[in-house]
Length: 330
Ligand code: SF4
Image (tube, rainbow, N blue to C red; front, side, top):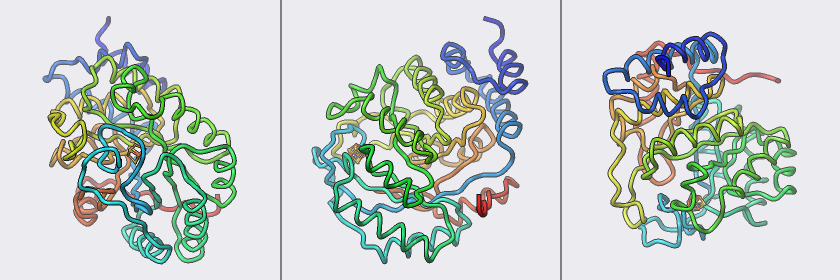
């Protein structure tokens, strides 16, 4: 194959056409000495096709732990012996968390629950929470509540949920090694329903779970096929008690290689650094932001601590990357 970086420059930067699975694999296999060049190209692509702004989001967990599913990376599964205990958050606390998130300049506030899919109790809580936040806080509301029925999709769209997060987690060919209690296709079908109902789709996954480079490129291509508005990239943070607790964290250079490659596969998508970036990248987070990423989750994650929001916001100021403002009355 011709030099993949030259090809990507013409195809992705020049025409806005994402890399194919095979081309993505070539990027993932670039030697260490070329990773800087790959990241620089991904940064140019992000600026050309997405602009300079960085989207900031906060998340809050309305229901933590005790999930019946067995996603092997997840400390919120009730199937494993992990130290996360089951807990619910009330509507007042949700509104407080939304206010705090808005005060950081974030435009998205995501309500997350550790469930296979929402039951009536959770839907009622979300209904009340969304209404209360909308009346008091100027912020877009996103939800992540697991697999949905068509009725639930329609209801969430109807109450004004702006974006729905549901991750594919990993490549179709590797999914069975990560989750056995539901299928890749079940996840895919919720994602399609969300998009068809007019909500923005946020769909990504976790890298560094033992998948091969081939499977990483397969995953990027499958995400591109689904065409989500946003792709959150997590890196495995091996949690005690989970089946993946003894996996090593992903080498930082591999994480950066993958980040830039995902940008080149999806030149127009919001690409967000989510969980695990602190342990995997540390100070190299900045390199990722100059390597294709244009969104961050600030503050704490669901079960682990992130960098404090102030530190992330200062980093964006240092990098001279403006935070995206809330679009009014779209
Ligand atoms: S469905 Fe979500 S909360 Fe439940 S185990 Fe899987 S990743 Fe964790």
